[in-house]
Length: 453
Image 1 (cartoon, one colour):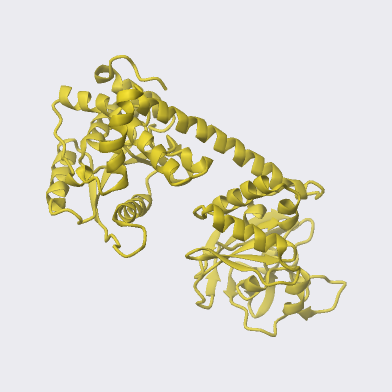
Image 2: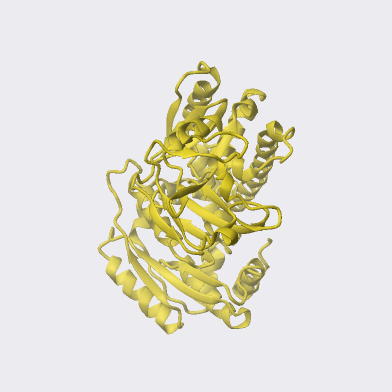
């Protein structure tokens, strides 16, 4: 969106336009409020918009404790929010100095973790056009790909983050603050050029802008172009992932693809498209992008190893890339605590390992709950030696063989929760319902689904 000619007068209308579909009655917005110039202006703009739009507004101040002024800043934020009738949460976080990320990145990670823990519909961040330009340059100098050069999104749906000032130059925010006699704090660390972002802000961008006028605006425009390109690459990856599924009656299932990626998807592509597909799939599973060399190593192991080779590649602190039965899987590290739960009508049950069970009543499918009086079910872990008969025309068989026959990856077989009616094994997710307990065509059945992380 183009900034109006008089930013002091028109910032309110610009923010209102950018939040047209977000700041509506019934929605709760949380502002990340540092107390600095940018978030102070956004706080003022949001409180002015609140009466006419009807949304709820609160704020969060993340206290890193890195500055000797940190307590003073928190108190300033409290007083400011109180004067505007905006509830404020001050969240204290510890910034790891030995994580390998550096203090700047570790503080940013802690800040986002705190903000994303809120139950608000959207989190408001006060990043502006100059921030976007700096982010693009940082990513460029790190050798980032298209996704990195897309910099910051105006709306990040996955994380519920909204940046309504992203196309506004900071100078316009300063003019607004002065015109409205706002007070704000100055973080002394913003002047420390030992940090990469500050070095670019104070040493590099001013030199560029002396030669190339409006450089920040043009760099931010490039980030928008990169964001569009990244979207097209994601759409291409989704098409490439879908190809192996086209001959299946059920068609392509994105949820299924999230858990499993057929090797044939990768093998059918040239190297650039295979890299793009693997990046997309890792992103789909919420994992950070690996370096180019790391991605190359993953592809090489997946595509070049013998068919019977055991592939195990770490792709994050809690995930491992595995290959099984001509498909790529992600194995999540999880809590091994045994399952012992009762179901008594809930639509969903969370299990100790982070997976969940869903329960849906459907006609002619699943467990014949009404006929069997299945108002309570017991959920338990596998112990070994269980026997099961999902097909009335076949004999009872060991659950071990049924799981192998269903091509369920070995690391998931022990995790599968078993559902008992009284003492009888009634349902094994991924295998079926015991033959004697299956709903007839005219009966209401309970369909139970297992959703591992």
